[in-house]
Image 1 (cartoon, rainbow, N blue to C red):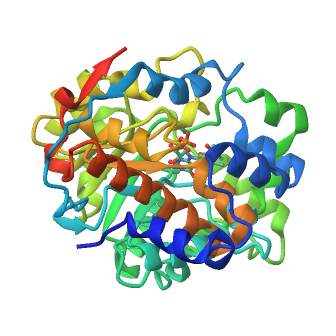
Image 2: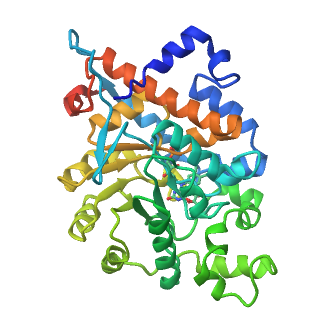
Length: 387
Ligand SMILES: Cc1cc2nc3c(=O)[nH]c(=O)nc-3n(C[C@H](O)[C@H](O)[C@H](O)COP(=O)(O)O)c2cc1C
Ligand SMILES: CC(C)CC(=O)C(=O)O
């Protein structure tokens, strides 16, 4: 059983400079310094959200509405952060949410591989985005013993969608996450101001360019005519006409666990459960897709209730160990982070991601131990009070 709080002792004993030179210890500093490490156009893409970013900000501030109530004289000697998800035992509930274009957030342009190696070192699963700078087979090869998930953006070319999923299965991914909330990017003023998408498009399309079905749609290979390949991708990327009827198709595509990402409404949870999904992923995409909505955490209890026995994965706004613990107490089985590990990568590459993940886990582990909830099973709504 991993004792994630030990990271604290490593730092006390050796000093932060002896453990992870130059990496920050607070999210505020991580964001500030990570932001400076990214080119301005890339930063506006990573940090930006939909509209005036009210929902994006709410995702974070909503955690302050809840407080953990400490319990005393609870035996904290046997701590356990492990969770069961889709038939797998994970050492902790933390996940790396899919981040397209993570490749170019690393100095060498291979951020997908660095994140996969960080996953191998920490046991924190990576959900690898369709939008990657390296083909999914290369990403999978770096995951070591840690199970990985492949996130599908469903193209409007069904044969291509099936090809991507079958490649992910063959490469050894252990689950398929279908993102439902992004068949087109939301209204993102920061990207519109800087005309970001044209810059981004050629940088994260390796899963398409390495796909036999996608390449068969082109007159010439992507390396010979990048512009035409990017144009074909842009016309293929999303499918606005998908409906709940297509869940049968998604389900038939794979025997791997199937997870639907972007679910916020209890009625959608029921449809997903009826359609045979293995987990629900409650998320508002970090506030990047639609402004004016509730925080993702606001809907978590209702989503959990509607899901019944089916596990719920949660993300959007998680910045610290206490956020992880609060989401778990509200019923999440596993908790994803997005931007925190992007800034870790920008600042310190693979080591930077490892530091961010270990810090989050140490903080959560120590908080649970100090507050008298040493095992995940001890956490529930009764551990929290709304202020
Ligand atoms: C730069 C960036 C790119 C993203 N790309 C994807 C993606 O390719 N697929 C996806 O399902 N979600 C994507 N997301 C959304 C994340 O998976 C996740 O839902 C969100 O980042 C969680 O919110 P947080 O950043 O506040 O932790 C992206 C998020 C960011 C910040
Ligand atoms: C191409 C984008 C829509 C990828 C994405 O999911 C995001 O930027 O949040």
